[in-house]
Length: 356
Ligand code: BGC
Image 1 (cartoon, rainbow, N blue to C red):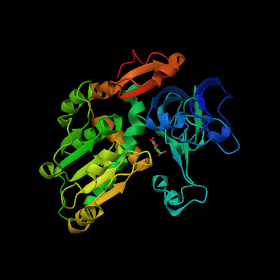
Image 2 (tube, rainbow, N blue to C red):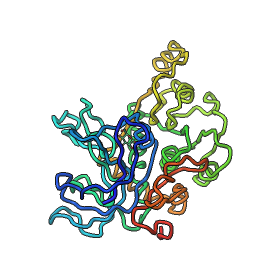
Image 3 (cartoon, rainbow, N blue to C red):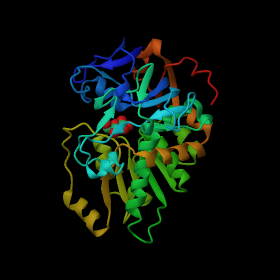
């Protein structure tokens, strides 16, 4: 079968090649891939900056934003041939740590977790993949190809859950306004969930043209091309989705009293900036502010993501997928285009014409 592979650590080694069928050790459920979403993490892996091959191997099959149809599943697994599924990305560490043992692998305490397509486990970027039934999430069939948005939505659903859990340590805390930095797929899905929570949502992105302003407005949120005045906006929640060091710097300590800044984008290291640690300390202590990081997702977050996608406008979700590239032209999918939001590789053919 065809699979997208890299040699982790070696820049631009990505290749579409023939590999053996997925091994039984990957799980009892056999899935035929429909689509694969691509993200910044894939680009980092392709650049050789991130990612690890499975133990004893040099090659990693990439891809963690999956969508596929079950071909075979064991009796009693709750899955049947034809079911639309996505694969959970992370697997618990082998110890397992207390968090992983409790099904919260997204909060792993010892860093020995693995991730499909990223860290020491082959991913979903192959014509077929195998998965353990408990790590395959069944989708509402009406989502159709939009199900490929499930994994990024799960990451955002976790970030929102964590913000609300932190905020609710104050008995009378009621969030009013949220600022989302970055109008990529993560930022826009975060804005979508913020609007679903009934918040006054503001999105900051430096892009003046393209589809981002319209997508933001069509959610009922406000689009800013200049970094907003945080004193005036007074956001209860800031979801930082760019990972860009100057933007991160502008957000931290900038929430309302008892407000929360969630860092959900990953920065490259080595960005030294001058930072007023005293001012930051005052905001944290004297205003009960919180800055925290959030990554990955567990079952609870996939369920929340499924609910958020079910409530969303299908036409709006479909506009997030700005390019659907057939597998035969896979290298085009990794080209950077100005107007890209989510680029999806079409493994099955016909995504373009699929009804949403
Ligand atoms: C994925 C997460 C993963 C993270 C770190 C993200 O792109 O969506 O599932 O945990 O990268 O590897």
